[in-house]
Length: 203
Image (cartoon, rainbow, N blue to C red):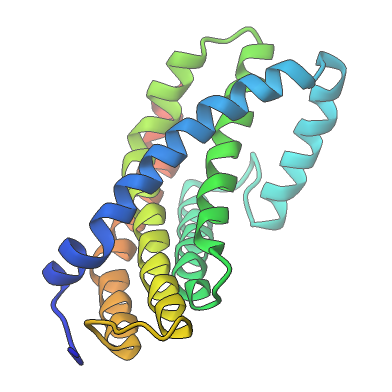
Protein backbone atom coordinates (compact mmCIF):
# COMPACT_ATOMS: atom_id res chain seq x y z
CA UNK A 1 0.00 0.00 0.00
CA UNK A 2 1.46 3.33 -1.08
CA UNK A 3 2.05 5.99 1.55
CA UNK A 4 2.64 8.79 -0.98
CA UNK A 5 1.68 9.49 -4.59
CA UNK A 6 2.53 12.19 -7.12
CA UNK A 7 0.10 14.75 -8.51
CA UNK A 8 0.22 13.07 -11.91
CA UNK A 9 -0.53 9.68 -10.41
CA UNK A 10 -3.34 11.13 -8.32
CA UNK A 11 -4.92 12.70 -11.41
CA UNK A 12 -4.55 9.62 -13.59
CA UNK A 13 -5.63 7.02 -11.04
CA UNK A 14 -7.91 8.83 -8.62
CA UNK A 15 -9.32 12.09 -10.01
CA UNK A 16 -9.63 12.00 -13.80
CA UNK A 17 -12.61 9.67 -14.20
CA UNK A 18 -14.58 11.39 -11.46
CA UNK A 19 -13.72 14.81 -12.89
CA UNK A 20 -15.25 13.98 -16.27
CA UNK A 21 -18.24 12.22 -14.70
CA UNK A 22 -18.85 15.33 -12.62
CA UNK A 23 -18.47 17.50 -15.72
CA UNK A 24 -21.24 15.52 -17.43
CA UNK A 25 -23.37 15.78 -14.28
CA UNK A 26 -22.77 19.54 -14.19
CA UNK A 27 -23.78 20.07 -17.81
CA UNK A 28 -26.86 17.85 -17.57
CA UNK A 29 -27.97 19.45 -14.30
CA UNK A 30 -27.48 22.97 -15.67
CA UNK A 31 -29.64 22.25 -18.72
CA UNK A 32 -32.27 20.29 -16.78
CA UNK A 33 -32.56 22.93 -14.05
CA UNK A 34 -33.05 25.65 -16.66
CA UNK A 35 -36.05 23.87 -18.14
CA UNK A 36 -37.39 22.94 -14.71
CA UNK A 37 -37.20 26.56 -13.54
CA UNK A 38 -38.81 27.73 -16.78
CA UNK A 39 -41.66 25.28 -16.23
CA UNK A 40 -42.42 26.05 -12.60
CA UNK A 41 -41.32 29.64 -11.98
CA UNK A 42 -43.72 32.40 -13.02
CA UNK A 43 -42.81 35.95 -14.00
CA UNK A 44 -44.41 37.17 -10.76
CA UNK A 45 -41.86 35.21 -8.75
CA UNK A 46 -38.82 36.61 -10.53
CA UNK A 47 -38.61 39.77 -8.41
CA UNK A 48 -38.67 37.72 -5.22
CA UNK A 49 -35.95 35.42 -6.58
CA UNK A 50 -33.81 38.41 -7.55
CA UNK A 51 -34.16 39.84 -4.04
CA UNK A 52 -33.09 36.53 -2.53
CA UNK A 53 -30.13 36.29 -4.90
CA UNK A 54 -29.16 39.87 -4.08
CA UNK A 55 -29.28 39.10 -0.36
CA UNK A 56 -27.15 36.00 -0.92
CA UNK A 57 -24.49 37.94 -2.84
CA UNK A 58 -24.57 40.78 -0.31
CA UNK A 59 -23.93 38.30 2.50
CA UNK A 60 -20.82 37.26 0.58
CA UNK A 61 -19.57 40.81 0.18
CA UNK A 62 -20.80 41.28 -3.40
CA UNK A 63 -22.97 44.28 -4.24
CA UNK A 64 -23.45 46.50 -7.29
CA UNK A 65 -21.25 49.24 -5.78
CA UNK A 66 -18.44 46.88 -4.76
CA UNK A 67 -15.12 47.82 -6.37
CA UNK A 68 -13.61 45.39 -8.89
CA UNK A 69 -10.80 44.56 -6.47
CA UNK A 70 -13.15 43.82 -3.58
CA UNK A 71 -15.32 41.80 -5.96
CA UNK A 72 -12.28 39.81 -7.05
CA UNK A 73 -11.30 39.08 -3.43
CA UNK A 74 -14.84 38.10 -2.43
CA UNK A 75 -15.23 35.82 -5.44
CA UNK A 76 -11.88 34.17 -4.79
CA UNK A 77 -12.60 33.62 -1.09
CA UNK A 78 -16.09 32.24 -1.66
CA UNK A 79 -15.13 29.94 -4.53
CA UNK A 80 -12.07 28.71 -2.66
CA UNK A 81 -14.28 27.88 0.30
CA UNK A 82 -16.65 25.92 -1.94
CA UNK A 83 -13.86 23.91 -3.57
CA UNK A 84 -12.17 23.25 -0.23
CA UNK A 85 -15.39 22.03 1.37
CA UNK A 86 -16.12 19.81 -1.65
CA UNK A 87 -12.71 18.23 -1.05
CA UNK A 88 -12.61 17.97 2.75
CA UNK A 89 -16.24 16.94 3.25
CA UNK A 90 -15.53 13.98 0.99
CA UNK A 91 -14.21 12.34 4.16
CA UNK A 92 -17.82 12.03 5.31
CA UNK A 93 -19.22 8.92 3.55
CA UNK A 94 -22.37 10.63 2.26
CA UNK A 95 -21.31 11.59 -1.29
CA UNK A 96 -21.42 15.27 -0.33
CA UNK A 97 -19.13 16.37 -3.23
CA UNK A 98 -21.95 15.58 -5.64
CA UNK A 99 -24.15 18.10 -3.83
CA UNK A 100 -21.67 20.92 -4.47
CA UNK A 101 -21.66 20.16 -8.18
CA UNK A 102 -25.44 19.89 -8.45
CA UNK A 103 -26.03 23.12 -6.52
CA UNK A 104 -23.56 25.10 -8.62
CA UNK A 105 -25.04 23.68 -11.81
CA UNK A 106 -28.56 24.55 -10.67
CA UNK A 107 -27.43 28.13 -10.06
CA UNK A 108 -26.32 28.32 -13.70
CA UNK A 109 -29.75 27.06 -14.75
CA UNK A 110 -31.42 29.62 -12.50
CA UNK A 111 -29.37 32.48 -13.95
CA UNK A 112 -30.19 31.34 -17.48
CA UNK A 113 -33.88 31.25 -16.58
CA UNK A 114 -33.77 34.81 -15.20
CA UNK A 115 -31.98 36.03 -18.30
CA UNK A 116 -34.62 34.39 -20.49
CA UNK A 117 -37.45 36.02 -18.50
CA UNK A 118 -35.71 39.38 -18.92
CA UNK A 119 -35.85 38.97 -22.69
CA UNK A 120 -32.07 38.80 -23.05
CA UNK A 121 -30.14 36.28 -25.10
CA UNK A 122 -29.29 33.32 -22.88
CA UNK A 123 -26.52 32.20 -25.24
CA UNK A 124 -24.95 35.67 -25.22
CA UNK A 125 -24.93 35.87 -21.42
CA UNK A 126 -23.57 32.34 -21.12
CA UNK A 127 -20.87 32.99 -23.74
CA UNK A 128 -19.78 36.39 -22.44
CA UNK A 129 -20.88 36.45 -18.82
CA UNK A 130 -20.21 32.93 -17.60
CA UNK A 131 -17.95 31.00 -19.96
CA UNK A 132 -14.82 33.23 -19.77
CA UNK A 133 -14.41 32.82 -16.02
CA UNK A 134 -16.50 29.66 -15.76
CA UNK A 135 -13.97 27.47 -17.56
CA UNK A 136 -11.40 27.86 -14.79
CA UNK A 137 -13.87 28.28 -11.92
CA UNK A 138 -15.99 25.26 -12.75
CA UNK A 139 -12.89 23.17 -13.48
CA UNK A 140 -11.51 24.04 -10.05
CA UNK A 141 -14.74 23.17 -8.25
CA UNK A 142 -15.10 19.92 -10.19
CA UNK A 143 -11.51 19.00 -9.34
CA UNK A 144 -12.16 19.76 -5.67
CA UNK A 145 -15.24 17.53 -5.79
CA UNK A 146 -13.31 14.77 -7.59
CA UNK A 147 -10.66 14.90 -4.88
CA UNK A 148 -13.41 14.66 -2.28
CA UNK A 149 -14.87 11.62 -4.04
CA UNK A 150 -11.47 9.91 -3.98
CA UNK A 151 -11.46 10.25 -0.19
CA UNK A 152 -15.09 9.17 -0.07
CA UNK A 153 -14.45 6.05 -2.13
CA UNK A 154 -11.42 5.12 -0.04
CA UNK A 155 -13.41 5.37 3.19
CA UNK A 156 -16.28 3.29 1.76
CA UNK A 157 -13.80 0.62 0.67
CA UNK A 158 -12.29 0.53 4.15
CA UNK A 159 -15.75 0.31 5.74
CA UNK A 160 -16.48 -2.70 3.51
CA UNK A 161 -13.19 -4.36 4.48
CA UNK A 162 -11.69 -4.02 1.00
CA UNK A 163 -8.01 -3.52 0.27
CA UNK A 164 -6.85 -0.16 -1.10
CA UNK A 165 -3.72 0.64 -3.08
CA UNK A 166 -2.97 3.86 -1.18
CA UNK A 167 -3.42 5.14 2.35
CA UNK A 168 -6.07 7.71 3.27
CA UNK A 169 -3.31 9.96 4.57
CA UNK A 170 -1.54 9.86 1.19
CA UNK A 171 -4.79 10.67 -0.64
CA UNK A 172 -5.54 13.55 1.68
CA UNK A 173 -2.11 15.14 1.43
CA UNK A 174 -1.81 14.77 -2.34
CA UNK A 175 -5.29 16.29 -2.55
CA UNK A 176 -4.17 19.18 -0.38
CA UNK A 177 -1.15 19.67 -2.62
CA UNK A 178 -3.35 19.53 -5.72
CA UNK A 179 -5.63 22.09 -4.13
CA UNK A 180 -2.77 24.53 -3.51
CA UNK A 181 -0.97 23.94 -6.81
CA UNK A 182 -3.92 23.68 -9.22
CA UNK A 183 -7.26 24.62 -7.66
CA UNK A 184 -6.23 27.86 -5.97
CA UNK A 185 -4.48 29.31 -9.07
CA UNK A 186 -7.50 28.40 -11.25
CA UNK A 187 -9.83 30.17 -8.84
CA UNK A 188 -7.54 33.20 -8.71
CA UNK A 189 -7.62 33.43 -12.50
CA UNK A 190 -11.40 33.07 -12.62
CA UNK A 191 -11.84 35.76 -9.94
CA UNK A 192 -9.72 38.24 -11.92
CA UNK A 193 -11.64 37.52 -15.13
CA UNK A 194 -15.06 37.74 -13.47
CA UNK A 195 -14.26 40.97 -11.65
CA UNK A 196 -12.43 42.86 -14.39
CA UNK A 197 -13.16 41.26 -17.78
CA UNK A 198 -16.74 39.95 -17.57
CA UNK A 199 -18.32 43.39 -16.89
CA UNK A 200 -16.59 44.75 -20.01
CA UNK A 201 -17.79 41.85 -22.14
CA UNK A 202 -21.38 42.35 -21.02
CA UNK A 203 -21.47 46.10 -21.73
